[in-house]
Image 1 (cartoon, one colour):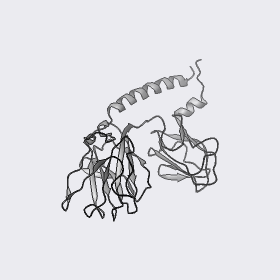
Image 2: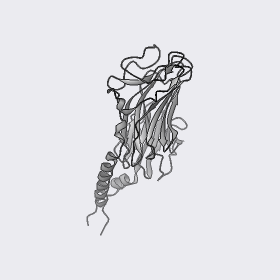
Image 3: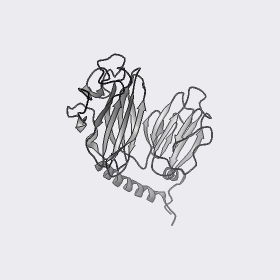
Image 4: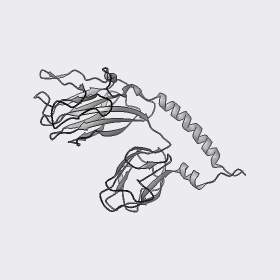
Length: 298
């Protein structure tokens, strides 16, 4: 009897359904928040003080009090949280902690959030995760990031059971830091997830923008990859300029990552302002089986 990909497809669909059902019930959804509610979805600051002034996070709508720093409004809804950098108690280089409730997860998962860091004397923002009793840095950015809200995506190990944001102001008042739109998602272990940018995913494959035609200028993407061997069916970018970062290494030109390689889940694409090429396509082995093998029921 000849092997049929249809059997593989049926088993694959059944496995994915069961895995998705389990993953949905194991996510720490209690920490997702847009801060529209006054309870902050359980997030809290410790109430510590510096001198006589509490090191507060504030829930706010509209712009922050100081011009030239802070957002003009929320990323989602009407409210967001921020730290105020004005005043001798709040700068220079003062740290503000914001803690989540305790949570649990049965597998690695994805935590996304919006952040706003605009100001000429901007400090830094980090997300730390607690594994047992020790906090380690999962994500960090420093310096002014422009006037717009930006998105961060962090892969969280299942061993982490609590978060804290640490906002550190800069050397002066122009360093208000804000967060909003906290989202909890399961990691799709079978398909690519385009988290940001114009790259395109069909599930088992992902391509550079406009592929097989040339990609555009000044484009970037963040892609969450399946936890399985991946294969490049095409790869053509500007050498040394337009790079795909895969497994922590940047690839460009005609030499992509090795076939069958696995990655640490996050794939990054960045290109400059000139000389575009046809780009790349990445697929899972299963997707290639469906493309190149036809069912045989004999």
